[in-house]
Structure formats: structure tokens, C-alpha cells
Image (tube, rainbow, N blue to C red; front, side):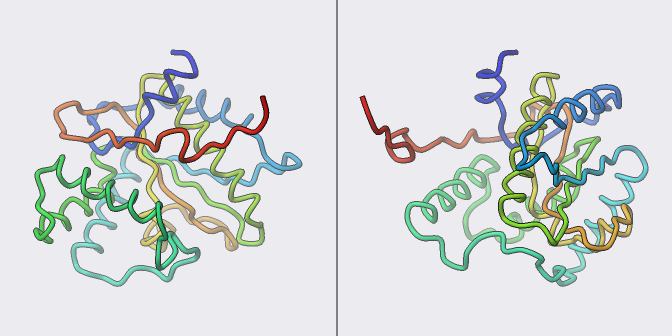
Length: 221
């Protein structure tokens, strides 16, 4: 698989087979991802990989917590601004509409929407998950470095025939995650990432992208 195919075939998959993912493959992906760029090579990512019984334990705890209606953990960063100005708000709304339409869920069916949301904490059935932390003392440029690292991981997973789904939703139950992972003090959970082989029987929608002229300006001849 070449780079262009990896980029264009990568998407947030929300339905995985239970087929195990080889640790050898995961180690190969993460060893290569370590070459991701970062300012002054400080490599600000702190990554945990969960499979097997520990992941089952985390899924069970998180789902029970959410199903019981427990309050979210206090946010350590803001996922989205309170008001998303145009065109960002429209893009987010379009994504939500496409997502729930693919699942056959009506806008007013809040129970079905909640069930769909809870699937986040089951990792959409994935047998492997990655959790990425960043030191709270680092700045916004280092958060950008973490984003480049995660993108590299996702592209390398595609090269291995795997899919993924990055999930900021895990930051909302970060204390539950910490009970399993025991990260050092001072680390902020940025996101989780479900990893596995796509279950093609699960309905999904491929969200589109803005036309090039909306996001890119060429200057010069």
C-alpha cells in the first residue's frame, strides 16, 4: 500500500471484528511511528497499548459507568469551542447527520443515540486500543506534535491492513482509564484509539471533505 492509498483509505472505523491483532504488528507500527516529527525532537507522546483481559476490564468499567449516568470527569482540555463558527459548525453538524443516518437513527431518537455513543467505550468491538498522553507542562506546539504522531500511527496501521478510530471521548472517563493504566502524575489523556480489522457488516458512512479551494490558497505562479 503506497502513502496516497493509506491516506485516502484511512477513516474512523466504528465497527471491528474480534480477530486479535498481533503484538508483533503493533510493535512494528509503533517503532516506525517513533520517527514522527516533533519540535527539537522532544517526542512528547506517552503511549499505552491495551489488549486482552486488561482491555476487557476497561471496556466493562467504562460502559457500566456511562450506562449508570455518572458525571464525566473534569475536562483537562477543551474538545471544541462553545460555539463553532462557520464553516466548522456546519461541517460538524453534517458529520453527525451522516453518522446517525448510516445507523438508521432518527434525530429525535435520543435513546438510540445514547446506545450508539456507548459503543465508544466498547472500542466499537476492537480487540486492541491505544491511549495517548501528553505532559501537562508542555505547550500547544507539542500537542500538534502528538497529532502528527497519531496520524503516523493510523497510516502505518493501514499499511498493515488494519483500521482505527481516534476517540477524544476517552478523555471524558480518564479516571476510569487511569485505574487500569496507572499513568504517572502530570500526564493528560488526550485520546484513545480503537485498533483492529474492520467489520464490513456494520453500517458506516464515509464523510466527505471540503473542496480544495475552501482550505488551500496557492500563492505564486
